[in-house]
Length: 471
Ligand code: AMP
Ligand code: ZN
Image (cartoon, rainbow, N blue to C red; front, side):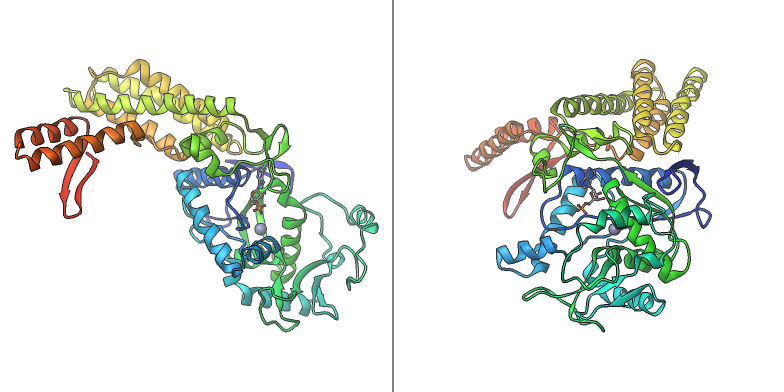
């Protein structure tokens, strides 16, 4: 399997540090609002990559943080007159709901920055001891960027160019030794959340959070570190400087970055105001459609969001799900049990699509080509399966389709949603049945129960009244 490594700008063979195991860290969102679909892109693409690693038999330790202390969170908390933790807790919960809707698996650990402050103080202390950091007179701790000889190796920037860029924007009153130095710890402002530290009452800089959470949950050296491409510089560059200086070993073996989700060819972002939240999309589409839309492009390519592409994704997804539904129905009525020789040959033929799928995913997680392979399998199923086939053959084909869909995070066995019209009809039937029972017209009440049952709806008489569920 090959992965494009941002560090070397090449596709490299993936060799984990420890055989059969993968440690992976994905920078998570800052939780001050509902996430937008740009934030959803890394969640979906790296969840799919994780699923593929698991499909290949790796045990994946997948860590993704929530940044729950930040200027934007504090600003929002002040606007609402509540604690910062009220804001972050609220939006972590909302984010988890969105993730569930998009079928993004919960990470092995979802650390919160505010629970890891002591680890941050430890790492900052180590950096000071080793001469990589210093506390200024006001209690701010800075990283001494020039001391880290390899600074710029991820983003391929050189220090002198960076220095030139900084010349004009030197902020007066800053106590840095060098304009390139960045903050590890900063003093609190009046009314802000803070923690005690050897330097001042304050809070950590953003970059140190990820270095520390990655170390705590995955160790000093990890296999893969990932996030959106806007994180390459300065966030990931700074993480490398901190982690490698403090731990004395290489930080991550592979760096993966997703391209931007754009709208009218411009990056979707909160600050530009050109965003849709995942919740906005959920009003119109099942979030599986959003997931499928994201996977229709290579994760490193820019992807332009449009209503047309969402419609295309919806149609494509329906085509796959319909093939699954049809196979399930055929399985139910199939009379022959075991595969014939002809079916065995056909089953073996269908393995070509699995090979194609794997080849695509092995090539730097090319989900666009992997999706094409699934479409080819669907076409094969549509032409080579019917109720006249044996149960075993149909089941095997279904399982094959389900496995590939599972890697993409597409739920094949999901029933179509009950629309509001059907729901009102069910409610009306239940009311009529209750009235019939009251009038001792039990024949009609049973008739209604049977009618609903024939449509896959089961009634339950409970103390709180009649409830319904799917069969
Ligand atoms: P943030 O909350 O801004 O730190 O972003 C969380 C994650 O979403 C990071 O990995 C970002 O790189 C990623 N991200 C933010 N906006 C976009 C976008 N428009 N397209 C793709 N990824 C994005
Ligand atoms: Zn990070």
